[in-house]
Amino acid sequence: MTLKQIFDLLSQGELSQIHLGGTQGIDESNWERVLGAVNLGLTELHKRFPLRREQVVLQMQEGQLRYTLDVKHAVSNRENPTVTKYLIDSAANPFIGRVLKIYKVFDASGCELKLNRVGDAFDQAHSTVRTPSYNTLILPTMLPVQALTVEYLGNHPLLVKEQGYFNLEDVAVELPDTHLTALLYFVASRLFNPTGLSGNTAFHEGNNYEAKFEAECMRLENDGYENSEQEENSRLRRNGWV
Image 1: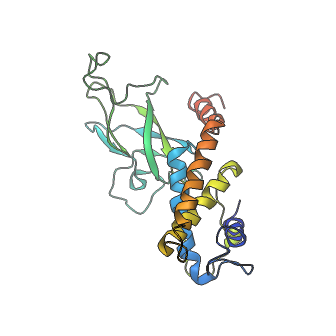
Image 2: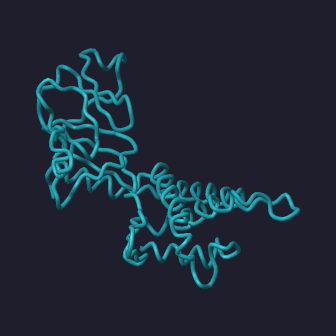
């Protein structure tokens, strides 16, 4: 879907009662405000649902145990020439960062390494990989230098209103149609919240849309929309079958 489709749905639906929306669409002067809420909504959905199960190859460096999944360490990144490049990617398929959580690490032979099991009964050899932060790995000292595959939960690419010409129809939003309603509810909640209560009533439109968002997320969870197909696809790529 495109950003224009999302803006049009908001304008004709959830935002039609405030000055941001209406039959003529969202005014360009308000695009960045709405875009900020869309970005937050996409992040929230990617936190709750494994919509982007990503992987990157990490080439270990001699004598280095701590690694950060940051774009400055990607081979394709030419902006930081003095920084060690240990994330193996390409210009055609660049590592964009936006890591939410590291959840699996595999060695060069495809065997899964223990993750965050320091001190438990299954880590007698102190062979666990630790993640002190959402995008940082500390490898065990016993691990030989090799290429590791790191699987992580990724966020949606940040949507930014470029200076000068900016066409909403040219901006792709990589979100399953199943999760679109939840996104619209989240954006409406964010944009209605500053308005407070409606008139002299105790009705709060922002809280109303927040409740709708939570209910929609619960429905998606109950219906099993967790993108298991993408998880399987990444597993096939890791083992070299496709």
